[in-house]
Length: 207
Image 1 (cartoon, helix red, strand yellow):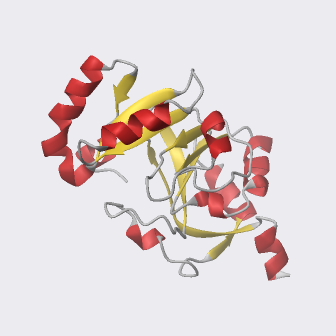
Image 2: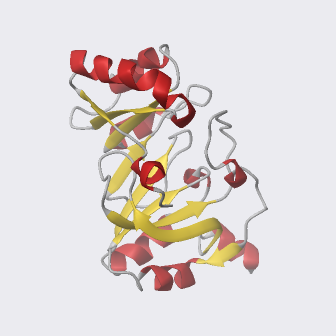
């Protein structure tokens, strides 16, 4: 029975959930409920949530109960992040949220096929585990992390694969922000199809 609920997406391994403001990308500054799903095999060296990598370390929560908690907050938007959330079936979660008028946003590396219905897809590709081709066409937003100058090449390679109306963002890797920010600003000035994303939540001290 437990296995069936897990396979149907009615149970998900939740690392944390909280209500806050979006700190990155297109929706920066907007209120949303954040649902961080545990488990990731991408392994970014600069990941700021490495505790989410472990499989089996996070409690399996009933999605219906999570949705009830979400509905207790005024913002009708949920950001599903990780970890790598696309490792799990997310149709049930999305259906329940949409039934209650909640917009569904996901942040993913795109390395795996996506389930669920999404109002907004933030694709943040990683070179060590690139997106599956179909995910490029689904992306509402492309957010590329810039740790070093060669990452601009990776950014342009990915920008060439998304749809024309996809919003393009470059975001400095947090530990390298003082070193890379001026370079990123200069790059955007020369390539204005890109916009700057900053991790505003870290600057102002919110989750």
